[in-house]
Every structure is written in structure tokens, then in C-alpha cells.
Length: 506
Image (cartoon, rainbow, N blue to C red; front, side):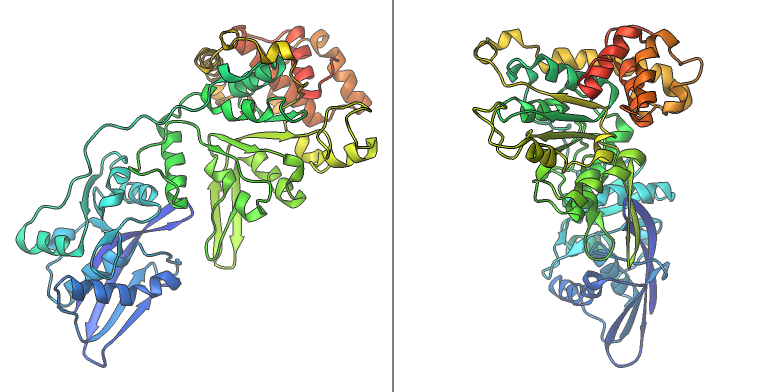
């Protein structure tokens, strides 16, 4: 037999595709030709596969070998096709019967000694195989736990090419995914550790309940970073769909923790202020990889010292904030990643970052305006909650921790508020108040009484509030009502929402 074919899986962004790996071995000058738009890493598979086959005790076929990956018009990237190429070459040479691999997807990277190494993106690859009707997969042992998360798929693992050959020839069983329940994720910081800052705590709670974005301004030591880092601790755990999406993105980026289990806690990303546009939104040679905005999908993206970030990097966030997705176009094609995250900005009020007042701050009013102006107006307009934190006093700093509510108590209120919002909006396809279009809140039956909106409408007419800001205040008012257990907001809720948005009462 000089022709053989097996199935594998390729990735484009988070989307997987079945790939047919076929090989033809014909008489002629020994050579290996690889076709099907392979990238550099895949082109180098010829040498890896040859060494792995020989070092696994198998005979390398000295013929003209053509390996093709179908569909030929789709670019193939990475080293995940190594194992499938080795199997199809042994099958085409007549060394290995391939009946055992009918309707089985195979992927894995080969070391020169024949070991099968884990690859990035195993979870979305197995999910794509399942969606295409494949019910059995063979994966590297290091990816087995991750792959077994996908329902309806029988996962078998291999640690060496030799084991796979022994399975076909001698019936030696393949490995099962490691047993054991999901390990508990480590506990994060708790809100009880935050001293004082009732306004900041309220802002974080409202943001968590409605999935709103937050900007925290104030001097160093006011608690901006502490509050932002504790936002994930009061967010609800991810449901199955969200957990699969988050785990798949972290798998593709190669940052999934050892064990590859589902991530149930909302992710938290805090890139340094020197991060580039590519680090934030994604990039890289060939097809772009996910950046911080995608790795914080269904979680929190925290930009500390936001005014120190490059203007281009900050403005690159505007589109994903609106759409919840990021589309990256490169010469090799376009890649789309989900990016529905909660943005938290923290910034000092001026370059010297000293308390305000002539005896402390060394900055002129122009310098202060110029510094905070590094965060563009259009970006700030997309931030629902914008609060300024005052420095802590001695009484607040020395107060016992028991006076501060722990994250578990706040998380319970947040969970109830999100459940109320989901029950109200789910029939319209929205899950949180932040998802609701402003037009829906301005029309019956959700439009609030004119008396409750009078001061807000005056702000809009005078130009001190944008139309986007008007809609975001309405969303905040609904979130505040949900936290208080009421079915509709009232005038007081609109007042508090306006203060959280602008820092000024209407």
C-alpha cells in the first residue's frame, strides 16, 4: 500500500477544522514534500517525524513521499500535525494497518526521541472534532485532562509514538486521561482586606452586579489596586459555556495551568503599562494569537497606571469594549477572538502623584489636565463607573477588618442581582444590564418616568452629558435597583447612578 489517510484538527483563532492528512509513497529519489499551505513550524515536521520514527524502532521508507493536508487552501500552523503525519507515513509504507484509526482524530507534537508532547489549543481542537461528528480522539498525555472536558468524545492518550504503534500491532492499550476531580482554584484576595473606601467598594459592587466598566482615580495608597484585584472575588463563577470559552482561549495562548482543567473563576489580566498594542489586543507572526483582552474574556482586564499606557494601546480597546470581539487581520488571514471583559482603569490624578493642595502637589493645573487627558475622552465615555477616591484617614486605616464586608457576602448580593437581570432580559437575548442597548431602556415598557429623568435630560440638552453617557447611567440605575431587590429603578437610583458616572449629583 502506497497511500494512506488519517484525520487531524487545525485551528484558526478559536475555530477548529478537521484536516485530512494523506500521504503517497512512490518510487523515485527519496524526498519528503509537504503541501497544504504549511507554516515554518509545520515544514520542519519532516525532520522531526523522520527522527521520531527511526528512534522509535521503525523503518523509514526510502521513497518519494508526498504529504498533503486538506483542505489545501486553508493555512496550517504549528506542530500539532506531527503525530498524524508519522501515523500516515507508517500506514502508507505498509508498516502499520490504519483500520483502528477510522473516524479518529489524531494530533500531537513529536520529539526527536519519539515522545509525544502536548500542544496548544487542545480543547478547541477536540471541540471542533466533536462538532464535526468525530467521537474518538488520540491526544498527547499532557493534553488528556483538557481534552476530556469536551462531552461526548472518547479520549485516549499517548506518551510516545512507540506506544501508538504497539496499540495497533499488539493491542497494547492506550492511556486514559488522568483520574481525579477538578482541583480547587486558589483563593484570591478578599474585600475584607480593604480599609475604608465605602465609595470605592460600592462602585466595585455595582460594577460586578451589572458587568459595568470602572475607572478609579485617586492618589497612591487610596486603594485603587486593592479594589480592582478583588473584583473577581465577587463575580459569579463561570457557567459551562463561559468556562469552555475561557479555557479554550488560555489553551491557545499556552497559559493554561498544569492539569488543563476548566477555569471556573473569572480570569484577571493586569498587563504592565509598557504593554504594546499587540500585547493587549493580540498579534504575532502568521495568524495572530490572543492578547490580554481575549485572555480576560468573561473576566477582568485591569490597567494600573492607565495614564502611563501608550495612547494607541488604550484607544485600541474602544472597539472590543463595544462589540465584545476583536478581529485581527494579517497577511496570512484574519483571526477573530472573543473579548467580552470588564475593564478597570486606575490612575493617579497628576504626574507627581502627591496629595492635592499647594503644600503637597507640585503640578500646575495644566499639567494635571494634560496627564489625565492621556486617557482619551472617547475611551472614558465608554466607562460606566468613574469615581475619585480620597486618601485614607487614620481612623479608616486602623479600623478592625471585621467592619469590612468579606467578598463572600458581597458576592451573594451580586449573584442575586445578576439573576434578577438575567430573568428580566433573557427573553431578549441579554444577560446583564451592561448588555442592554440604550434604545431599549428609552422605550416602553422599560422607560422610566419623566420626573425621575428630568435632571438627567437637562444635562443631555446642555451638552455636559453624551448620549452614550445617558444610556450608561440608565443601565447603572437598573443595576442599583437589582442590588436593592427592587423591580424598577426610582429617582434615587438615577441620582446614585449619575454620581457613580460623573462624580456629581444631577
